[in-house]
Picture 1 (cartoon, rainbow, N blue to C red):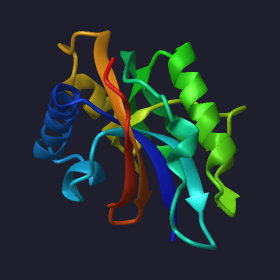
Picture 2: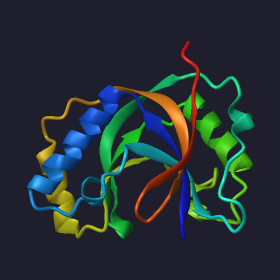
Picture 3: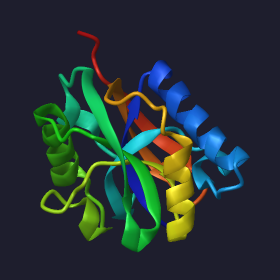
Length: 172
């Protein structure tokens, strides 16, 4: 069973992304995030946990909320994924490195390791090339970049998302 460590956003960002998921679904394009009621997020670590399913959040002591910019819409063509792509800022990269070093997962997906990590907030996945193009055309009027505030980290169990534990970042 896969698990992930994720960074979650403020309510305004969540509403924006959830509305995007809804629009995709209403246009008859598969949107697993909308169908399974995901919470908008960036996955920092993804893999398996063989032991106790918990995280010692002590490595985030002092972590403050911070802003990122979602700069564009993009896709991983080989995986049929369509997503919002944020700027790979210093605070986001540092947060990812902390999670990568302290996850304690028994195995980790190579695409989420520090050297290969390409931050993204999935809008739809497992799409055909034609569906990816249709998705992109739905958001021709989306104003980019837009700011999002990163507010917390979560340990989530999949395939049906269940938040097992959380760490709220400090307000400034």
